[in-house]
Every structure is written in structure tokens, then in C-alpha cells.
Image (cartoon, rainbow, N blue to C red; front, side):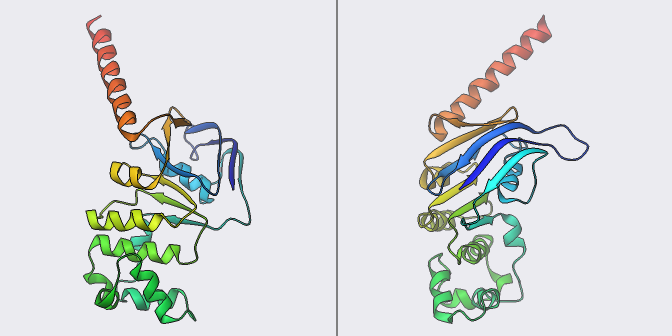
Length: 225
């Protein structure tokens, strides 16, 4: 389990992005964090994973919880001179080849595709390999930062199916299909806060449009006034 208690964060020399964050993630939490670009959603994932430390407050992670993180960085870090199967064998020495083949296959990397040079794979296929790698040790909770970037529809479907096996999922995404197929709860990030959103992703988008219109009318009134 993961708890954030009275945590604030700001990058050195800059203002606080978040103040007094308080929330928890259970082993069975399935959450998508939503919010405008640049609001700090990825920063929150980094605080949760331990890549960043809070300026003040506490981030508690149970020592018993296995956690994995998936982002575009993991795709960019693939060994392009290798093939998917050989790459997995190097990452997990001593594991039987058939077990690695089976795991790759569960993400759609099957047959000859598992033996093709990595540099010949599409962006979506590389993402599948990267996802297979970080999930091999069966983490309890997986954190995903815009996981559907560069994925085709088939790859997104494979990702949705792959996420079913995990107890806990926390993702940052703007992909409505991925969100609706993978999680059951939305958290909205705005004004330095993180709060549950009581509705669907469609409801959230409608709220954003209303806020944009209200902001436009307010700006117009100020200018005309």
C-alpha cells in the first residue's frame, strides 16, 4: 500500500506545484489521473514511485508491495540490436526460454515477431516488448505514464487485456478507450490538488469544456469592462 501524507512538492528554485497532498493507493485500486497537459500528473507518479522526493510531507510505500513503472522511457531504452526473446533472456538470465516466449506472447509478441530485430518493430510492438519486460516479475501495482502514446488500436487492446491481470493500476492518460477499459476511478489534478472525480471520463471532458467557456466569458467581460 502507498500513502501520501501532507506532501508538497516544487522543483528547486521554482514554486510549489502541489501543496498538502493526502491520498492512498490500495492493492486493488484502479485509477486514472486526468488533467490538462503540464499540470504535473507525471510529477505525481514520480513522487509515488520514489523517483522524486517531496519537498515536505511523507510518501510511504509498503516494503511488501512490488511496483513497476511504464513510460516512453522504457520503450526508448530497448536494445535495438537485439530481438524481443533475446532481450528478455538477457534481462532475466536463467529463466526457461519457453516461459519468456509465453510471457511475450501474452502481449502479442508471438512466433517470428519474437525473433525479429528490435529496430524493425513498430512503435506499438516495441511498447509491447517494454511492457512485457517490466511486468515479468508480476508487480502488485503498476504505474503508467501516457502508456498508449505511439500505440495502434490493436496494441491498445493488448495493453487493456494485459492490465487485467494486475491488482493495482494507476495511470496518467488522455486515452478514453484505455481509461474506460482499464480503470474504475478517476482522479482530477488541478490547482495543486488531487481529488476523486465523481463521474466518467466523458463527464470530466464536459466539465472541462464548461470551465473553458466560463473562463472565456470572464476574460471577455474583463476586457470589455
